[in-house]
Image 1 (cartoon, rainbow, N blue to C red):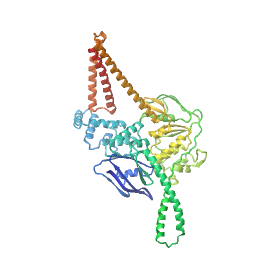
Image 2: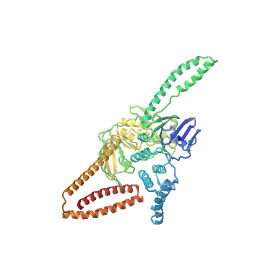
Image 3: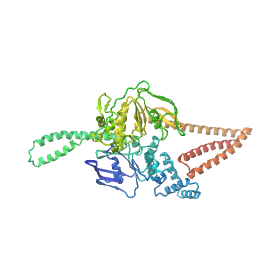
Length: 625
């Protein structure tokens, strides 16, 4: 049974149908990915489903007993509220108790409020729920709950909105590009969280690994029509290719038949009989089918790459620090021709700062960065496109170059190059501020490539680009003859393009890893497995040693030496101290105080103390016998 359904939805803008008789249903527990090119109507459909936009035709119905959460691309909040007031707005009693507890912690001068909130947390058994909330906030890098919404960036607001919906836990979660502004580690956590959830999900995303692991159904919007595929993203690609091949075959047959019928209809006299009328009606159906081929424009990227000399880029003992945070320490590397390197690290570790040092926008505190004379940098940053108010698209590009040299040596005008980037003449004369977010990012990419760089530095280029555009960009970068330095949270994009990685581990440590992102994840898993095996072997050796010592003691009891007596006495004191420390940590853990990192740290410390206690107690028993 559908928990949300849309029947025969149509939406028209001017003379163009964005959606035409679209029907979609979401079942309980279903996880659906909505895919399609930029401008195909994905966001419009989500807005119609959530009631933000009304359809021209058709209706949307949701079951009365379900709660729907909608994360838009640009969430809107009351700017005067704090993060805590924004997140904890649910009627859930446990949420209210947690909010009161968090507020009480901020005001230690009011102990009675703290005591009251602690009692309420105990009565509602909200501690486990609070740990879950702290985990969500910690994973989304949200810590200062007293901060005002007005002080947050667009990316931070998106994280707050995502936290709100994950905590509120609606029956159906509708997400529009949820992975934008998240680092790879957080995306992998969100991927796992959503895939393990039994809640229903409808999402739009360009992250192909994310779609493949989270969703069990793909819905494609294509020229106003909707197509359903039962399976993950890989299955969708296979079946989509089959569908398009069948469609093209049917259209070709219709075209052949149309030519024959057109010849017949031209020969017919104006007065027709019944049979002729039937054939004429059928002719118009054939004509409609024959002319139904999609006139699809694809982005064309083909620019000349300037020649690279022997010396490209050298980093020598580079050191950079912001406040107390080290970005790079003793970073030394020499780039070779044709290298494609990815940069990986959690948000805030310094990826963009490293790129800005290489491009000369920020200077290192120590060390040198030397560019070769023939290097022509092309830098695509996360910053928004910079242009003059009222400036038209064509004028903006002409300021850079009026003539563009393509990869084959051919030259074309700036207007023709804009056409290749899907900016037709009517758009070229538009003011840039009237472009959509995706169009502005495409224009920004064009601004970089039109200058024929031979060393590309791309900082999160996949944001706001559809999957088709990403595929074309991937093809261009794969054949790109220059060097590439890439920061991206899109793991599929990274895997296809890079040969090795700079891993920013924090505290200035940058690891050079030979392989792509999937290779790195596999290596991490292998390291974790090896550590686990080492711990297991160590534990087995300790148990075997204890068993041997016990057997020896039974066979031959003897008096303790002076050193053993001292050890025995010290062990009693140490065991008592460890038990007291463990009890204190357990109390703090159960109280729910501290951040998610604190809770995780205390849990690990309790585990270590328990292991140490086991060892010392066994030794105490051995000596006591």
